[in-house]
Structure formats: C-alpha cells, structure tokens
Amino acid sequence: MHQYFLRNSTEGGAIKSRPAILFLWLCLFLAATPLLAQQVSWREAARNFEVGFSELGDKTLRRSSVHAILSHDRMEGVKILLDGLAFLEDTLEPQRIAYGELIRQLTPLQKDVLYPEQHEEKARLEAKRTELGLIIFDGEETERMIVKGLSETKNEKVMDKIMRMGLSHPHWIARSSSADALGFLGHTKALALLIKAMNDKDSRVRTAVVEALGSMRIEESEKSLIRILQKDESWQVRSAAIGALAKLGTKDCVEALIRAMEHEKGRLLGDITQKLRRLTGFKFIARFEPWRDWWETAKDTYKGTSILFRAPGPLPSMRDPALPPKSYSGIETYSDRIVFVFDISDSMNDASSTKIRSAAGTTDRKAPGRSKMHAGREELKSAIRSLTTKDYFNIVVYNHHVKKWQDKMMQANPSNKALALQFLNGLKASGGTNIFDALEISFNLGGFGAYDRHYKSSVDTIFLLSDGAPSHGRITNTDQILAEVARMNKLGQIKIHTVAMGHLAAREFLKKLAKDNNGESIERY
View 1: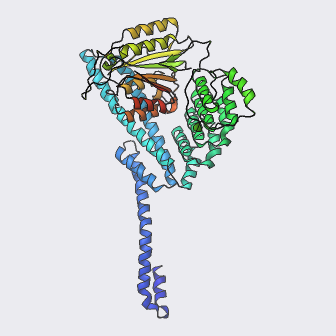
View 2: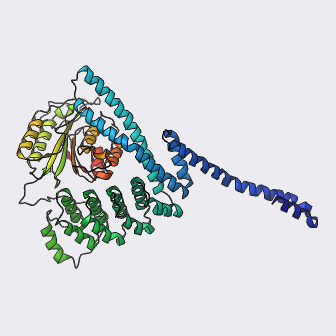
View 3: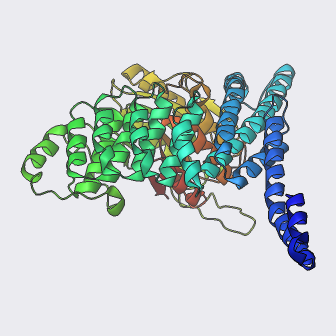
C-alpha cells in the first residue's frame, strides 16, 4: 500500500500532493489506533480472565477481568463468561457442602458455658466457617456480577449468543443464568428456546426458565406454563408457575389455577388462593369447589388482567370454617412444613409496649403489660397447637447463639407438640440478636439444604419473629443478609413471613425480607 501511494504521487507531476498523502496516512493511523487498542485490551481481558478463573486465581483479577469482558459487550465474551460461571459453581459446591457440615458441628456448641477444649473447638470451627463464608460470598458476588452484566447488554448479537449457547450449555448454572438474563432482557426471540428449556432435566433450570417467562409476560407461553403447573414433579417449579400464570392473568390462566386447586395441597394451595383473590377480586376460601362453582358462571364474561395491575387488598381468612385455623401472629398459612424462628434476645424481656427512653437506647422494663417474651411465646404455642398430624414443624430459637429444638422436621402429633410446648416454657431471654445464623440453620434443616446439589428442602415456610436489629452472627449488615437469603432461596422457593415485635424491631428490614420472599409481614406491640 505504501508503494502504491509513492508511485501515484510521482506520476503526472503530482509530487506536490505528498503533504495530502501524509495527512491521509495520519488520519488512517489515528482511526486505526482505537481499534488496535481495543483489540489488545480484549486479548488482555481474556488472558486475565483465564488467569483469574484458574484454580489458584486471584479474586481481584477475577473481578476486574469480568468487568473488562463485559465492557467490550462482544458475543465472544458470552462463552467465556458462561464457562466462568460453570467453573465458579463447580469450585463453590464442595465448599458450600463443607460449610453446611461446619454449621452442623457448631450447633451443639452454641451455648455460653463450655469446657476449655470445647471453646478451642468452637473457635477453630468459627474461624474456618468465616474463612469459607468469605470465599463463598466472593464467588457468589462474582456470579451475580456476570448474570447482571449479561442481563444489561443492548447488543443483539450478544443476546442471540446467550440465547443459542447459554440455554444449551452443559452446566446447569449457565443454563439457569442465561434464562435469568433473557427474562430480564425480555428477549422475545428466545421464547421458543425458553419453552423448550422447560423440559430441562434439572429442576433448578426449569424454575429459572418459568420465572423468566413470567417476567416476559408473553401469552404464547401460556400453554407451556399450564402444562408445567399440571405435571412438573418439583413443587418449587410449580410454585414458580403459579406466579408466572398470575402475571399473565388471562382467562385460561385463571381456569388453570382453579383446576390446580383440585390436586394441590399445603402451601401451594394457599398460594393459588391468594393469587386468585388478587386476580378476580373474590374472596373464596382455599378449596376447589367454591372456585369451580363460581367459574362455571363467570368464565364466559370474565376479562383477565395481570396480577401486576391489581393492588394488594386486605387478606381475609382463606380457611375453611369447618377446619381449625392455622396461623401465627395473625398470618394464616396452608403450609404443612413450617419452621418457627423465635427471638430470645435480652430485649424480649421488655414490656411489649416499651419504647426507647433515651438517646443511649435504654429501655424501661417497669412499663405496664406483658413482656414481649411472654406475648410472643404464647402466640407461638397457640400456632403449634393449631397444627394437625398432617403437618411437620421445627423451632429455631436465637439470641447471640442459635439453637434447634430438633435436628429434623417433626410430625405435629400430640406427643411432639407437647414436647415443643415444654421446650418453649423452658426458654429465657438473654444476649444479642443473631438473625442470619438462625435463618441459615432453618434453611438447612432438610439435610445440607441450600448447600446441597441435590437440594430437596423439607421446609416450605419460615415464620421469623424478631424484636431488634441484627447484632451477632456471620452477617449483621441487613442488606447483605437480604442478598444472602435471596441466594439461598433462589432454588428453595421458601416463603418467609416476618413478625416485628415491639417498637425496637428493625421493621423496614423485616418488611423487605418478607416481601422479597413472597411472605407477609406484621407488626406486634
């Protein structure tokens, strides 16, 4: 090219045009420089990513390389990022299982009086738990960063790459993350592949796909969502389908939800009832027959609308009057697998009407009325008495320590209920407030729970009562607790109800915890 320009510059006496040619060369060089720099930067980003995601990779380099790959927004980056997700998940899985085992080992050491050797063992286990917790937290933060980055692309080629490669990736985390991203992007061209992915062998992927379709609200997905509700063996997937159908809100969706009441039971029956009430404005109890009878007269004239456009109204009783009520602190439930998480910190000794008396945070325990401990315990005892032999339950109590009533879920037969009431009667309030560890142990009551690759929780509902802000445990920052619970509950679909006890409770945190996990929040004074 250089010889071509020189030859043309001497022909026809055009030697005087050399300054113009030099200027042209300069323009070409300046135009090419950013492209060359970007190409080098891309190569460097890919190389750093490979080093950061190696077995002994540096977490700082790992994070920065993810940012660099995402900043280029190139379709070649999709495979790199999805493979990175798979690597992280395979690396984190054994650490999560080891972390779950550490929780088991620490549970019997959650008390104030220990032998010297027990103190040493507890300190060793706590140090290891903290170390593993930080590793897991960092890895999961990187995973979230990748998924968020993929979800924010505006590049059509990148979207197509996520659609084609992500949903067929060999690793479940890549497939589910791609579904998350496509649902957030509302990438309608992905509809056919998302519907196909509803047959994925991994229930975690199916849950993500169903939630993505719910976010997209495309009526063409209606038949597939109805099929999932009718036939999927995983209750977590069916739970996601209930939410997705309610977001569509068409006539066929309402009919499918009503028909599902005929075979669903427990928590999902309650969930369907709540969705139908929001969609239709009718307040029938949680039973198939009255909804079926109403639908026979209303279906010809019914005009559907999404639950998203229906303002939440009051929640009258869902209970069949012929059945005994099952509720805790005024929150009704149809669940038959419940964990009650109960605060026994020192401030529960305050009267239920106690307010902060000074800037130093001192309280007056001579105020009239029952203590919060007494009031909360009596409500919990009433809830336990309302359980039937078809129900399974457990109790987790917490102050600065956490204690399980039993190591596994227990049938609510008369003998076990009597033992639970005896356990509650023996409790005394003292110490701080360890909300995160209490929730973590509750999530893990079904084996290794959220840390097990074959996660099949024996818990579907948690009731958390608290009268104060988190002050102890591995995580005390409320935003971090919310993020970690969201991570643990992504597969579990566990409903978390919260009870804020008294004026000192972290009410906004408890409200958000319930809202983020499809539960109700109530305040008690």
